[in-house]
Image (cartoon, rainbow, N blue to C red; front, top):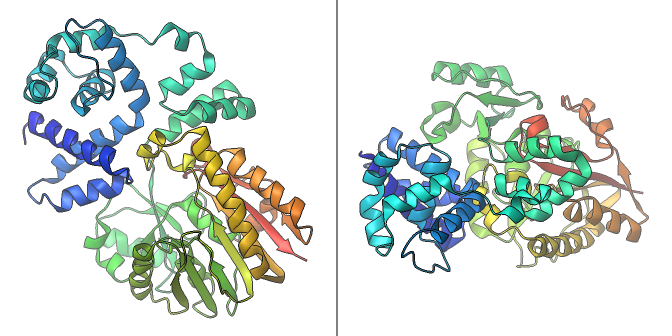
Amino acid sequence: MKTSSLIGHVVEVLDFVFDSRRPADAVVREFFRARHYLGSSDRRFIAERTFDVLRHHRLLTIRCRRALEVLPGAPVMPALPTVILVAAHEVTCAARDRKELESDIGPLWGASVPEADCALFIEALARAELPEEVRRDGMRLIAVRHSMPDFVVGEWLERFGVEETEALCAASNGNPPVAIRANTLRGGVEECREALVREGIAAVPGPLSPVGLVLPKRINAQGLHSFRQGLFEMQDEGSQVLSMLLEVRPGMTVIDACAGAGGKSLHMAAMMQNRGKIIALDVDAKKLENLVMRSRRAGVTIATAEVVPGDGVSPDVPPADAVLVDAPCSGVGTFRRNPGAKLLCTEEYSRSFSRRQSALLECYAPSVRIGGRLVYSTCTLVRRENQDVVGEFLSLHPDFSLVPAAEILPRQGVRCPGQGTYLELFPHRTGTDGYFAAVMVRS
């Protein structure tokens, strides 16, 4: 397909992402399902450009505004047309030849921005500098350069310093590795690896999880016989480690209070050797339908799914040996996987989650048996939603006490040095998505 047509598809799918506010990966999958004519290289181009524009959205927007300021006849644009952002990406991030870009993007440009000259805009983009007030402010400069929220970068600078904050921002904009979890209910890790090798995929053991494998590239899991057999599940290694913090055993009763599509429920079922009971709860019925389907493929029979009201709280759950509250959050730790989440992530947005997270802990704590375990986790990397939520909970519930994550991980065969009381996984250190977890025991 011609580059001009591919860029048109990028603009189209980005418009869907901006309009729907849904995760970009879900929008892209749906877009491709409706367009069977796209080949694998076309899909790769469209997906990579789409995610790149989202990753660098803040930087691209500022550069566009700077270029438009000096462009003769440029209209006032409260919202930038998507084609302008794509043009900025091609100049700023892809280093495209300007003449080629003008030819490729010209027809789309004429339809969206007829008042401004495309060639002059591209020239202005190449010369555009960041505003002086950004260049003078170290925190804002890092935030704009990596298209991160100011409040996130500000906190990271306080905690980690400039060098590590830069590394964390860069990793949060990178491409995540493709990780899977071998399903021990269907066979061993080596059996799974060998099955993948027979299908032409050179899987290698993951650096953290004893049941994790890392693949060299993205795969179409549905097309693999090993996946249809239930030998593995797509799951980030960090997510696998969260499940292991509960140290579940056969015969236990476990509540997965914010189960989503049930990846951790399935992992815990395998750890429990499919003996006991797992109650998976979520507000999204469609996600729980996926859990039911995935359970059949994985051979899991002990997990039941229950849709709960919009506040996320089940009105009637039995006493449990272990409760996982993998709470809804701002998703800062998953920016590299869902870069569109950056567009929503403000300080007030984060604050709204911390209130909800505290309410979920408050509601599910009574379900933990005496001696039982409560694990609170998020996929965000800001203290307001992590340490502060746990600290407030413990101050109100003296019958719960922290168990250091560093004590649990070696028992579970997890290779993750540098952990302390809390589990904190950072993309630039562990190669996983960003996760936080606190383990508490009821006495």
